[in-house]
Length: 147
Image 1 (cartoon, rainbow, N blue to C red):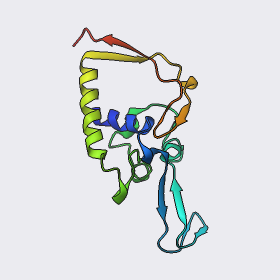
Image 2: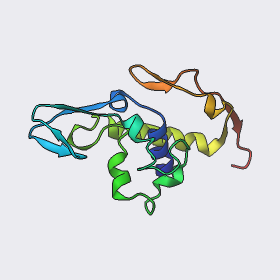
Image 3: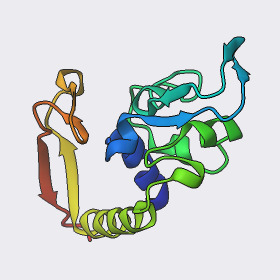
Image 4: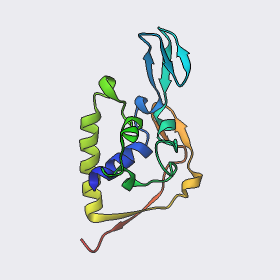
């Protein structure tokens, strides 16, 4: 379950330049979606936009970790999911950042319960070196007395 939460978090929380755009130069003339793409052209993919496209993710504006359950993740979603890039040009720090995020989340959810105190409709992305909420995110943090 933790891995599913990590993947959902990486999709919804922009991280690094790869989240802003992924650019590639076309080696050979090609056709994409019926459009001719000449050799040497530059293609730009914007993961932030792809991650919010209803063709690839149902209810794309919702934080829905269960969408990353293995039985729900088809080949198209796997290709559209690229929080740290995709293929041979994936972020060199992908493995480390995933380990760190997994470790942090495991420790947090072990002892605390988090509730979003910011209205999600009030959050707007701010693009810089990383994409982040323009006004931050407020959480209510409560110690879990059950654990």
